[in-house]
Image (tube, rainbow, N blue to C red; front, side):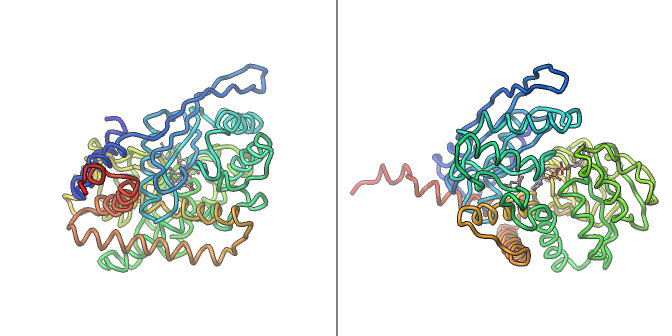
Length: 428
Ligand SMILES: NC(=O)C1=CN([C@@H]2O[C@H](COP(=O)(O)OP(=O)(O)OC[C@H]3O[C@@H](n4cnc5c(N)ncnc54)[C@H](O)[C@@H]3O)[C@@H](O)[C@H]2O)C=CC1
Ligand SMILES: O=C(O)CCC(=O)C(=O)O
């Protein structure tokens, strides 16, 4: 099943429950804009390569498009429009003044030199400069992109548009108008949700065991934060495989090893399984997903827990830090087994929330302290958690459905305020 079809299945159920008008259903069925461009990039050996590049704006009733940029070989229009749909619901759920968007380039960034990566990043802005903008569509980092890339892109935008315009993109380096704590924000936001959940579900043990798939910006920082908070992180993974230690992994050593990727500007060259400082058993990513742990946290790619492997999952609760790691059907099966699946549009919303703070600071010429960012983020994540939890109890529904319904209520109000069939057909 295509990713978009799967995401639409979760949304359709929320639409039925809220009884939204036909107009709203129609407007949320498709993206408002979906653009594919070709990026010609001169490679170091003199060859010219042309990469397909995308930006999809799903809906902008609540504000400019907002969402990350991904450099990955699986990037295509289906992925981009699904990720843009999730961004629309995430921003609505967190009550941010943004619509949803997503973009990316179909490329394997692991094969590029640093100079090729910079030329590719600047080429993206060359072709999309007129499509994005601080009040139109505001990109940010996602998989295999980072602050350095956002910095190159902001610089390229300023050059093309001939004006300083840092609010065009978030997740920038601090020196270029980035926001303190943006790099940690996705992990911190997830920790707020995990803490809130565990406060209410005290049957989970005092030192819960955790398995995390993905050890990048989201997964590695989350592993560190949970490790420091006393959780027993027993398994983590990257694209090359997983490492497992039932007594708990030495996360600081694994971070030290993996951070060489950032120092050298390469992706996944320093595989976790090659870490010389920590003790572990090597397992596969598939085996990690089947571990008997209290908390399972997929923080890499979509479509990781599907109908094919869902019956092997033995975790007590799943927190989606990746976008869409559990398919609609797999989530239904888990819920039938009383395994809660906390949805990505809630759990991973810390990243876009701090992007919102960055955008606001750039527009107003302000600079927040890290303390201010951390406390505002925590309050907003807790508030979203409470609203989803209340809706879940009211509807006696899954977490995912409740989150979609809360977000849809806000989108529905905005779309209706733009005009409804009932208004035009009403008689005086
Ligand atoms: N960076 C952010 O602010 C946000 C990221 N997300 C989502 O979190 C997920 C991860 O993103 P980032 O951490 O930013 O990316 P990243 O590029 O920093 O790291 C990605 C990680 O996933 C691992 N990985 C790649 N393919 C894998 C596979 N097949 N199996 C296991 N691991 C694999 C990589 O080795 C790497 O450790 C994505 O789904 C992204 O959309 C969601 C919200 C915000
Ligand atoms: O920070 C942002 O604007 C978007 C982050 C993102 O791509 C996501 O939440 O999936």
